[in-house]
Image (tube, rainbow, N blue to C red):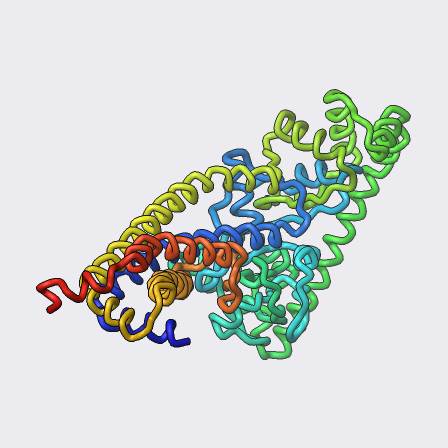
Length: 481
């Protein structure tokens, strides 16, 4: 403790040099610490947000952009695709689950996503209060959305076209908040989920309720006569749609049945379910048969932004992407593959920053050496007096080593805190939750060892020179007389 106290006092006695050494060391440590935080946080967040999605179907364009827009919700979509065409692909026996997504609007910068309840289930999302969305004007908002906007169950709001909070407002269509999700630490914390029909309804240009009629005509009129008239019209509309839909389905029933009984089709289906490889021609025949088997419906013209697929069999990873990319006007992108490719591109930037940071650390280590060397030269008489007063060579040697270690350790602590302060003020990404500031990363603990080693190497030469100092010669020199 005596040596530690003496080393601290010697450092405090020259505050300017000490602070400069600490600052240089802290800058290098903070850059490397930021890289460690960003790398781990990004990879963990992305892995959490993949949520078991094996493939994404969307409009042709950049596959990385498709993944960023549909899985991480961090980019603009590549376009829209036809719902029925996407469903024909998704009904493949190799697909275990498919979830449609429709994007296009936002509320105060948070995306409104038309989808199904299964999308929230991918992220194990639970309700903090209220209930899940069921009807067209209803929404369930994420944890961070509710916290940042102040939305509560029962509130109504309208969306803005696009993905920025400024733009054309759909003030004729009001959403109603029915529930708020609990925090998941995933991308759904930053999303507003609604039935996919809501996205279609709001872009039809009219204020719709779940059957497509105007709210002002039916919902907000308080006169009994008008209300009954709207109910009567609604019943007739539903009855007409139901009858025509049944007739439409009946007219195609035998056609669908004939395709299901096709021996060649059944053989291909069995081979697909068994995980066996099939030719491109057989896959195209299977898809074409599905398109004929599923009768056209009233939503044939409807479009979605993307379709998320979960495989039933690993064989789908080989067959489906190739078939979609070569035989349709859509593209298929694997989230895991495209994000790994993106990380490989980002790795170059991380490596460059690492080199800069290590260069700063080396320079700061040299600065510690210069600081201790100058301290030794100025305080050589002081060290000689310490020797006369009973301090042995070993104590003087250890004291200078401790000074170097204190500078390195102080620079490491300052760098770690500086990194977290910078991280706090950086713009956050929707797919990355807040970092756990209280936890040190394994890489930062390894960085502490490097820092202490740098301090040790920087101080060992001045300490050795002090160890070899001749007390009699030093005290009898004219300038010390």
